[in-house]
Image 1 (cartoon, rainbow, N blue to C red):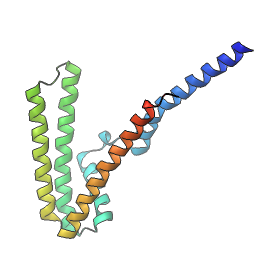
Image 2 (spheres, rainbow, N blue to C red; image 1 turned 90 degrees about the vertical axis):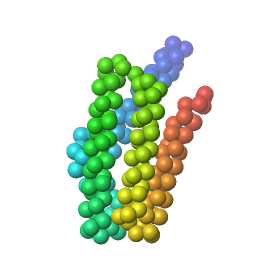
Image 3 (cartoon, helix red, strand yellow; image 1 turned 135 degrees about the vertical axis):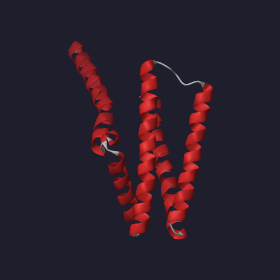
Image 4 (spheres, helix red, strand yellow; image 1 turned 60 degrees about the horizontal axis):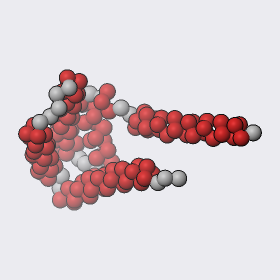
Length: 153
């Protein structure tokens, strides 16, 4: 009887572990794998989301589409180069990492200035609060993940 109970406990732990590991894959499938989209498709989706939230006119949509498409092209190129370095086993040096982060911040600043030119003041303020909300949501999600791992039941 004790062996049966012990076996059931072990099976329960194994199945719960397997289910917990599989949740990340399902979540990515539900969200859609954006790496399979072209730059134009990613930009179109982003513009549509922004249009729903900011009520953009057609000229704003066109300008933001060009901006987002360029951004998507840069992101995919950077992702490919990082994957190649990872596959080749060449880790980034501290100077390369600094340059990478510095150029990313420069691109973010340029993007913000371009958005400020495209959007009116009310839309720009709303866009900035949307970005802050996205960062907070990501932080909250990560905190929930780590909080769950820290508990020892």
